[in-house]
Image (cartoon, rainbow, N blue to C red; front, side, top):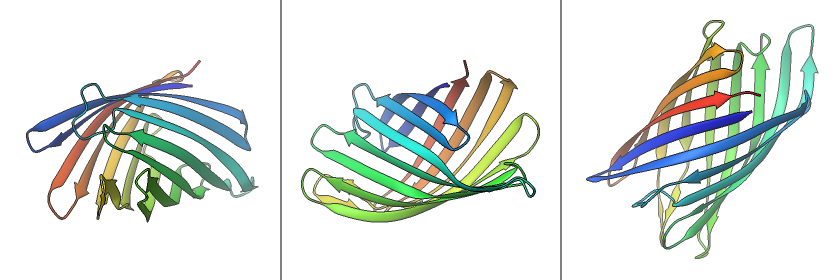
Amino acid sequence: MLRGTVRAAKRGDLTDTQVTGRVDHVFSPDLSVFGSLGLTPDADFLPGVSLALGAGFRIWNDDESATEIRLNARIGANFYADATVATARIGPQFSFFDGTLSLSTEWLHSWSNNGLATDGASARLDMRISEQLNGFVGYSYAPEIDGATIVDTQSLFAGLAYEVDPTLTLRAGAAREFRASFDRTTVSLGMTKRF
């Protein structure tokens, strides 16, 4: 499965646009993997290059109740003009009613090439609204490494995904970040194509 996303973010008078491509592959109901690459031309505050690799493992399921538990893990790196910040994430995902409702939680650990490190957490609720429409809402507390400082950062985010047909999904999302010195709103549009 191939997925493309365009993200526009504004900070004061500056606007960055990031284009990301992602490849997902399901080996079996018990194992799926992905890789992604994001590029931000003429980046002012977003990373110029973003890389990520991840996997999902099904560790328990019950066919009678259509419930399962998965363990998701990923590692990524963001390359800024003056620093590199890596992040590792791991956490469980609980799915109910054959995927109609799912809850994901993650522990996040970030570190940079200048020796700073920080920890955070996130939670996300996904729901199937109709046969073709899915939505999600979430919250994260993820202190951000910015140069030689750690910035306390909280985020609220939400989005929708509409399945045009079995091979094409359109996505839209928005996030609001809260920081001590400023708040930031990010809007994203994406498309997933299955082969």
